[in-house]
Length: 285
Image (cartoon, rainbow, N blue to C red; front, side, top):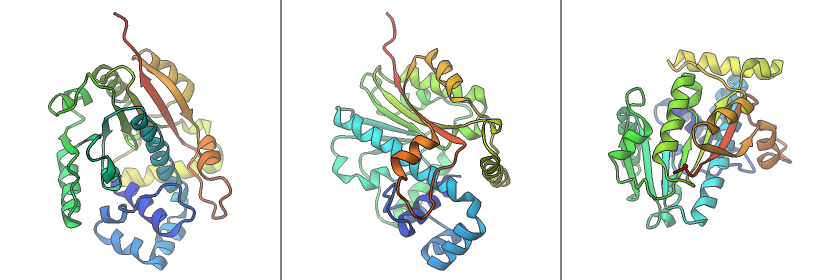
């Protein structure tokens, strides 16, 4: 689904106004027939906005989660954070969009080796591989975030910012909490994390359940079925036991008010995905 997120960012960049999230390199991350679909305004409208119109709120969610996460990231950088870890980086383009940070921010992109090989081929195609990025190979079925970072230049003594987007939907509840626990254990106190998650279908209205069902069918056909969902209040309670404290819980309504107010094109975020912004607590001696 990393390609799907890149498609969402690319079509938003080319044809939506105003931009919720500015990603001038999203199109460069596309491959196969999706490049010419997004490149052609008519095909983009016909396929992504007409035939796949039910997915439009998902595209809204993708750009909203990226904007929310990077707003928090920039605030952390302003406070002096110098390490950024992208868990399940996929086709993320942050490093390409921030050349001014090359000398003061170390970026660690964690992903499966096959995904990273594809990403690096796409970067080679455009002749850009940022020098402040370390590609950290990890098989999330066998390794934790902490295990992967131990094999990199990541400094666990220094506060960091981590993003983990578009992934928990496809993991078991146990795997999600194991990853959160690993982050809490390997990142220095004061480090921050933004991640997203799916809420249960029963908490949604009829239209939103239909949108979620459509996305689940698409994901299942691609071999990435949705697995787990969480109620926001219960999730916040459980992560507290892991050594994480909630900074902000961002509902779809909050995201819509913050980033989509006054739009005339109907773009909005999906109602089934929430964002959590958390901090690693100081551990008792």
